[in-house]
Structures are given as C-alpha cells and as structure tokens.
Image 1 (tube, one colour):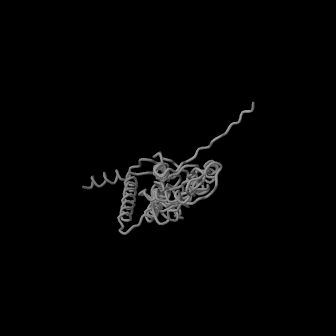
Image 2 (spheres, one colour):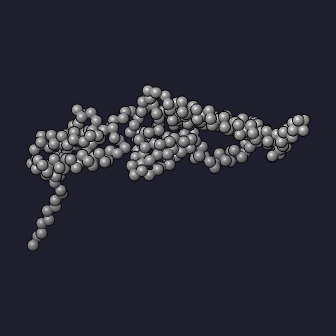
Image 3 (tube, rainbow, N blue to C red):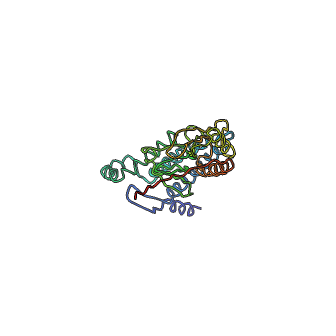
Length: 279
C-alpha cells in the first residue's frame, strides 16, 4: 500500500517540462485538462440555456449570439490566466518582461488589433447582430457569425464572405435590418407618350399586389414622376420583408407588370434615333 502511494505520488509529481520556476508536472497537466473540460461544459450549458429560452423574438436572436460570444471570450480568457498561473507563469511578469516585444508586435499587428477592438465594439454595442443584412462594397451580405477579429456572412450568390470587423465599424455600411424588418423598395418604369396615366398607375399597383412577398399592401403606391426624353416615367413603391432576396422579388413584379401592360395595350418605349442624310 505504501509502495503504491509513493508510486502514485511519483507519477503525479513527474516533471514533463522543466524550465526552472516554470514547470509542468503530470498533476498540473491533469488540472489543466480539467480546467478546459469544466470551462467548455459551463459555456455549453450557458449557450443551451439561453437558446432554449421561450418567448424569444427574431430581433432577440442576434443579441443572444452576441452575449454568447462575449461570455465565451471572457470564460476562455479567465481559464487561460488560471492555466498560466498553474504552470508558474505570472501574467504581470510576462507582460513586464515582454514589453519591448509587445510594442514591436503591436506595430506589426496594428490592423489585427484594430479588427479585434472593432469585434469587441460590435458585440458590446449590439447595433449589428447575427442575422442582419448589410450592404457595403456593392454587395449585400447576411451576417452568420460575429467573431472577435472577423465576421462571417453569406451574399445573395450563397458565397461565404469573411469581413474584417474594422470594415463594419469604420466604413459606410447600410444595415437593412437595423430599425425594422420591412423596408420600402422601388421599381422605375417608363411608358410611351399618349398612354393613359391613370390606367398605368392602376396597373402598376395591381401588379405589385399580386406578389405574395409584398408587405403592408395598403402602402403600395405608383407615382408619375417625370416626362422623360422618350417616355412617361413612373415609380412603383412597395414594402417587403424579403430584404435579402429582394432582387428576385423585383424581377417577379417586373414580369407581372410586363404581362399586365400587354393585356392593357400599354407600350414600353425604346430610345429612337432619327438620322437625316443631306444630299
């Protein structure tokens, strides 16, 4: 029994790595593994508890993901500090002894730090959330994940886009989901001179109302906006919740308009150029 006790003590105190005051024994390795397992389990329980909460609205889901990310980062940061202390690395000593190195690294990784700070701002501020639809650089992206350095989204071609967080913070970005889930869109249409203006307005509004993705049908409105060079110009205004696939909705409405124009003998003109030849 005494021999087994000494053997177990020897195994636990066996130094796997030894750098003087900094060393890693079998016992410390087991403690580190336990810290990682406990941290991972607690964060998983926290995540599942939040996501299972009843009565959540769509707008709350993005906030939940932001909270989960922040708690994840805080949890793993605390675990890392405990692990470093376990193997004998004091964080204050590490920072002091590596001050010059950190300054050099800071200059070289300035953009990375900028993205990191921007990620923290995105998560804490909460103005941009998972599920939001953003427009920048002539592209429309739905956010799938907000990371600490980069965010991940998918565009209308189902291509995954990796976005540096500083770009979302510093650049001009349109957030189509920021205020409300419905947004007003417009379709410009020109018809031939001599067309019945009242009939055109009626046909445009009826065409929009035929589409199932139109929201708040009472707000559908067609306007006669200008006399063009070769056409009478109209604008069809409507609300829709299908923001991410709005170009497909517009295409469908244009097809309905074209069909109804043919039905009512309304002509869409095309530019004409008269050429005069002098003899």
